[in-house]
Length: 319
Image 1 (cartoon, helix red, strand yellow):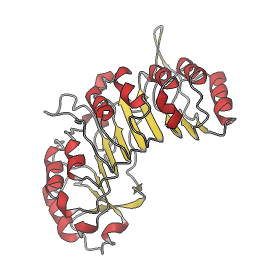
Image 2 (cartoon, one colour; image 1 turned 120 degrees about the horizontal axis):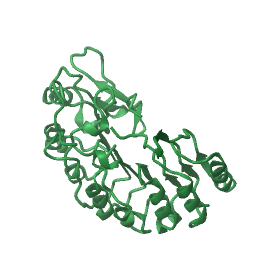
Image 3 (cartoon, one colour; image 1 turned 60 degrees about the vertical axis):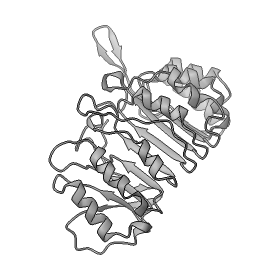
Image 4 (cartoon, helix red, strand yellow; image 1 turned 90 degrees about the vertical axis):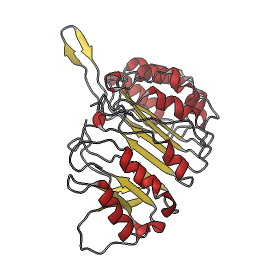
């Protein structure tokens, strides 16, 4: 799976790409989510300066950062430093997405990111943070990282990765995020730096770590059966309304653990799309959770790749 399209909406706002040069009239700054895209032509520093010159930054509510390079793939750090340096000019900013990049522009595992902790430190009123990418995979000096931090306003946190470093998962579990309602972690595969273990998830799966949490997604993992087994007995499920174990290598083994674990009758939605369940197990899941009133997504059933005498299961997003 590759990312085929950019966001149409973000943080409840229509996404508008800001491009230079442009003669068209601009909408009110707070009515759209502004997307910045260098399009291989304009250095990010020039695009950013044009943006803050033309758009009233005090009214901007949401930012989406697309491709930030204009000649060759480069680290996100210089672009992010420009944004952080102007943080005080954006008092209304409530949502930021870093690296809204499609597979045609750059493979997800090749996105060269950096430490995103300063985003939370410089924007204390931020309610939503999304990050796409993961390990630098040998391309950059500093891979995606996060340090434990307290943030009182953040409600949505998403890491979309083909190889999410275990350090990031552990840091999320060590953060104090009392308002967090939606947490989404795409773990990816070890080949692309996804070295998180089930043990790394333990603080997140403990009830009370994030008291406001209502949706948890632990997705796109080659350890999906083990994660399902851990979640089946995890205290956090008692507070969840929505759970996603999608995009990974879930088999009947993991599904059986869900059926035998803690009652998940509180769930309103269970997302298992891109799975390797047998038809009979899929029907058991559909019946068990559907009869309790939950919406169940069992779409995109996959079959393993066969190589000699082995069956190979694969995640939705890796490279």
